[in-house]
Image (cartoon, rainbow, N blue to C red; front, side, top):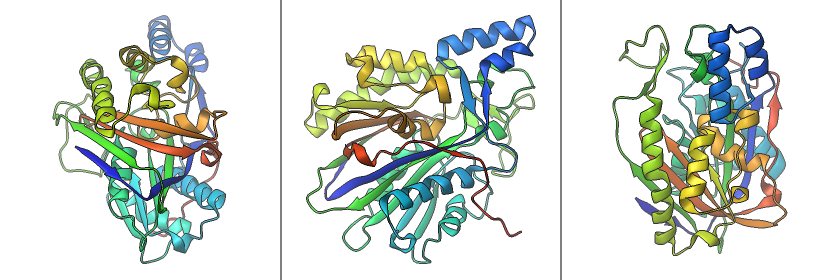
Length: 347
């Protein structure tokens, strides 16, 4: 599906990660020879050296609220001026209430604000931005779109084998502030989906269907995901550009989902672009799933005052979702560290 929106701008971009860090070097020190070999191989292929992990008292809602709070502060938006809030995550705090409701309460958003969870992973933040743009107009001009996961809490920790997959994932949230602005350059989206039932992520309390995963909270066929990405992500980018009337050279920067170094490097080659036009953050943040496509923008400042960017997210679904937008780079804010909970639970 291709969709274009006018009179909407990306007013701000921000991200948040937990302060706690786990390094591959630290893990290798306590590993035996067999595990050390796996860690060394995976870290080299994926291009990572460390990841951010939530401590026991920080959850998805805390990172989402920290991101939203940073956007409100930086943009000088009053909480009651936000008309809609979208939170895309595969690791919600609860089955109910929604994580969006927890975040709205923490941010002090008004009771008229639409608060919505989007049950999606890596493409979730682009998915949510598409939904948000469908509601934004001069009467409901402002939206916060937040996305990310804290999968290290659910079976992605160190200690039960499968060490290679453990170090691939980091915790983080990121988001867009979207605002109605007459005359703003168009924002366009392209989505490609190939529904698949062989890949599943789940954790106790959020669903009724359980899988046999040898005690782990997830089941993933990495080879199949890689095959899907290699076959469809670059092609989807080309289709999006064609439908938007643009060429590869019209895009100043490509912010790809940071799945792993091999996949992103393959995309750079397939599209014929330079590595400088497609920055990576895997080394310091690992794969932060739904947050990574936006976090990549936050970590890589540019000298240009304004860029036309393609944000391309892909994975769970299986799906590819991309967004092309012009962004004022002074409104792309650095990632903040979160050391304390932001959400108060009265239970």
